[in-house]
Image 1 (cartoon, rainbow, N blue to C red):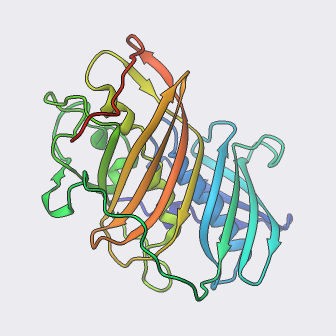
Image 2 (image 1 turned 60 degrees about the vertical axis):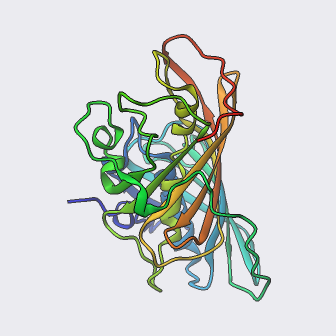
Image 3 (image 1 turned 120 degrees about the horizontal axis):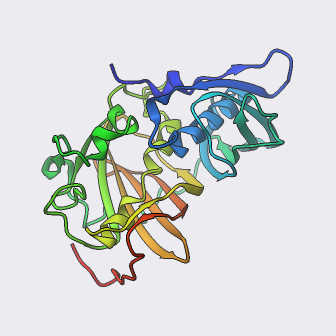
Length: 298
């Protein structure tokens, strides 16, 4: 049975410490360690519960990962920095329960929650032409041993599809542009009280950017692991659709770290969210490549 993100990131208030919340994160969302995006969702869930104002909705957050987060008992301390009529801003420090929050934090989040207001409705971004629509994308199910959708618990919580030619675990994989698109649908739907996609379900999807670097490097002996240094998420619109496209572009990898960004669209062409990420590149095997993928096209 697939996991439920809302259940797995649910928080409970500490009866003795105001602003402190507890969560027990299972291993359902692990890569090597739990997804940084899921850990971010845990912290945002604490902030949302603490604010307890339904008109306020998650709009943006930046997370700094200071120490690794493991599955298990976590504690989050929420501090309200500003509570305004239209915007409220908070800081969340989250770590393992055995450590004291704010002294040995695993992550720090600065988040903004907004009330909807009257304002201009402007579409400034076009659908990424290099990302194929859902109808022509391919399922990721196969029995190949390197398929990450079979190997990692995180991916088992989604149905996924890929544009043709980008399955980096298959023998016919070739190097391409420094970008990667993947369709996701939560196997357990994530909805808010209005029936829209839960905005707090977006950080885990946005935190899937390293394959853009893998695609630029292409097949070969070089292997790497790319944990997050920081992750920023902006949410600008809502959807009732289930299938979401995450279209990622690697901007630069250099001197042991990399930066990338991600657009999130629904399958009706609605732009929902944007994220950016800095990654620490841990070299696992092979010679470090030097590549210019900037002129490549799909």
